[in-house]
Length: 134
Image 1 (cartoon, rainbow, N blue to C red):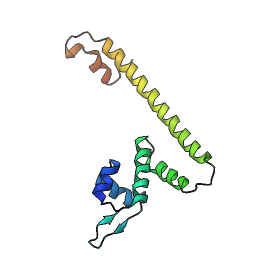
Image 2 (image 1 turned 90 degrees about the vertical axis):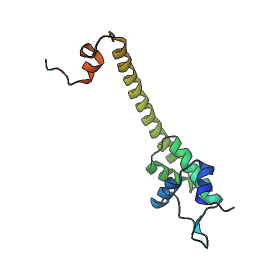
Image 3 (image 1 turned 180 degrees about the horizontal axis):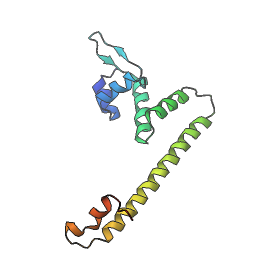
């Protein structure tokens, strides 16, 4: 199987520029070239990019994806490092969720206090302004 960069992108849901970027930073290995100097991707590149896309969809950083790829190449090793990396990522996701929930509560409280008056008496505008010195 030989795929063009466009076909690889379509099959993985990845933009061509993103594929080129991943090649530049070493996340993907530069593929072989055709006689016409076009990139020629195979099954290995398709699988690797699919792995990268799924990891990115789960919110792993580029650095974490690099680590996961390196670990995935050592099939006979313990998966403890993968578990540790995924656990740290989960903790970060949970922290972000807690931050978003606090933000939601704050915005909800502001909206519940709205008096439907004019901008000059708007509590939301007041809350966004500089803190008043006491």
